[in-house]
Length: 370
Image 1 (cartoon, rainbow, N blue to C red):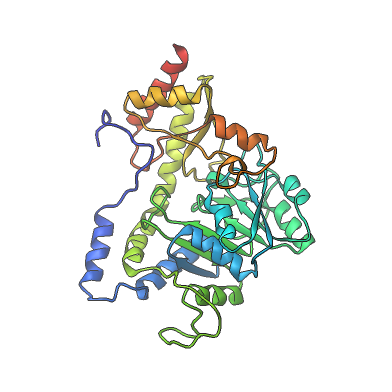
Image 2 (tube, one colour):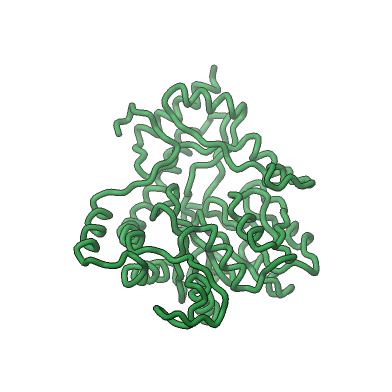
């Protein structure tokens, strides 16, 4: 793609490494269903995040659902969720007959406000589902959510779908990867993520019993691999070896992708300095790896149309979930509502060149100067 071609907001990057992994596996005449390559992929994610266990599944919504099931959440229970998130977060528990309870997010991080989460707790609350928006940690620190969980006995599930490559700085001797503060952390490998297997999700935990339960839940509740003896209810949410081949190749590229994602954000920050109409959300790049380039725009829809006419793709950020027809609930969540009005993702793919970023920033500056 040349610097003058249409610039999409996002596209995955697959190439020679993925092809080599796939062809190598095809030469083995395998069954395609998850086996040794999947185990290797899980081991790589566990190693990278520092988790004791990793369990991969077919997508990142199912991973959240299985996390909830493993923690005993079911019909009639309540799960506190941020009003600003991808709709998979609440849908994952709605599928179980549980009820998502929405709270607003912090204006500078777009992560759930811990004080509002505490106010939303009722006797029916069975989990808090914390979303690390674009890899960011809560302003109050993850320790505030851990303390709330410990004080109330309500488990914390981390929806870290956007956060592979991001870390918590919580005063410990060693940093913890985002997703490791909760009882279970969940990641997504859908097409726009920093690494992708097309679709896919992963669960990490340091709890041996939870890991064993998750493995049973994703494999029909089997008592052991390859048999038809079932000592619990379960479903078929397994991975495939083909996805694992792609994932292994992508994991080898992850350190370089983290470096490039941070460089992309820096280039945007430099290029948009002094442009009053578009404000990037900040990142501590020593800890956070931006998944998308996110910000709020004056006259957002006009800006998006201007950029599209000049060969630049954008994407509006998530609207507040409580106002979407799928939920249509009362509530006042001003931060989420503002993002629904003004939030705009700029091109964020790993393939972006510096020249393309400069072109994008130039067009944004020209729009607001007109």
